[in-house]
Image (cartoon, rainbow, N blue to C red; front, side):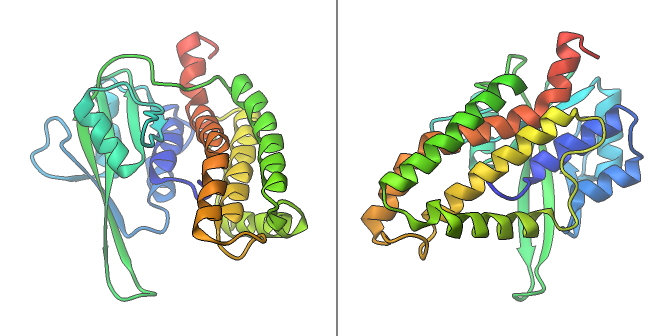
Length: 262
């Protein structure tokens, strides 16, 4: 929840590239991040995996005008539209990108090699057919912002009720430390996103971080397995709200285009 997903980076910077706001080199550099390399497999017209630059250009020629993020979880196909084969693969990866303008979706598969401290990460994006339908359970930015404000209050109340010391200053310090690490060298979203989307994403990440702090051992007085399970269960609705808000933020430029705002 805290860190920016690979699918989120692909959606955000892919949208900036498709809108002509960044160069292909800058977009690919931002998408790859600290990974070694990203390749795209299953692209129509290509018999072997290709690089991101070629893949994004090919998707544009195939009619893709925008990219949406999906962050599904068990029982919650957030951002997905089917078919079942694509949904299952996206659920396995806990993330996916769904194209707007053409019926394709991309799911990442991560490969790691090397000793601890020097891990080499490669990502293969699998292109699969998707169903043309509205994505599941994605709120508008306005809805997401209102829900997040309520979720933050609920999270604080739940943690206080469960006697979690992390719901006070200890949690605030931990949240600030998490955010500092997450934001070091990272730009929130990408060029072209409205300020409200950035605000919603930052708040969603803050709520997500509070959940992480609350459910990690060492924070609060209750640390038994059953009590940690109770915390996770009590905070599940809050976590779902934060995930929905993240997807709303990343997808906002596509939703605005679909409504004819831009």
